[in-house]
Amino acid sequence: MDNLKISIIGLGLIGGSLARALKERLNIRDITAVTPNRHDIDAAIRDQVICRGFTQPNEHVYDSDVIFICTPVKYIFGYVKSLAGKIKPGCIVTDVGSTKSEIIDLVNSMDAPPCFIGGHPMTGMEKDGYSSGVAHLFENAYYILSPSRSTTPQSMAFMKSLIEGIGAIPIVLDSKEHDRITGGISHVPHIIASALVNLVKDMETPDGKMQMLAAGGFRDITRIASSSPEMWESITLSNR
View: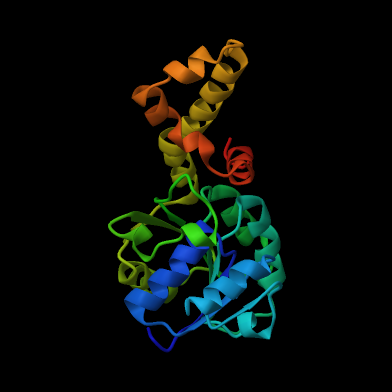
């Protein structure tokens, strides 16, 4: 594992935590990051979490053994299409998106898709960004893997081993079953929490009594409403 070349596209909460976990738990030294935010690249290099960082994929990325796409769902499709035909033979492309059917359908429709395995770590927090990342984010969390037509038994076995190495519990699910399950236990709760926050905002009295009197129960049920709006817009639009 420590000789692997790994690239992470997207250095937010999940991407940053993944880089930390790979470095700390598996001693993987060759990690490349891709993100438009130069500040995050500089911080990750300074933290010795990554070796190098770029704003666009390049030859360092194409020469990886594994590429994790850790962006909002709507950007994953473009990256998968752009990587096809450029990466080295045997490279595994995976993602961490919260929906799986649309991306697996895209890969299955491609003439020459990369070796792709859909991924979804069932973990996170309401905070976002590289600075919020922690190496133990995946500890004892289920990490769903969804195969595509380009997935090989060897690549799936390797990904299971890698996921176990960062402390998570791999579980293989068909992409459509994944979306049905996560729709009920994750996506609908986020929609409800956001709707409740907006409802109370619209109902608020001029003297702010609703905000003043909102206590632990309201806080507990609406905590997740503070998650990234861009990420959750992308998730809900891709899971009917």
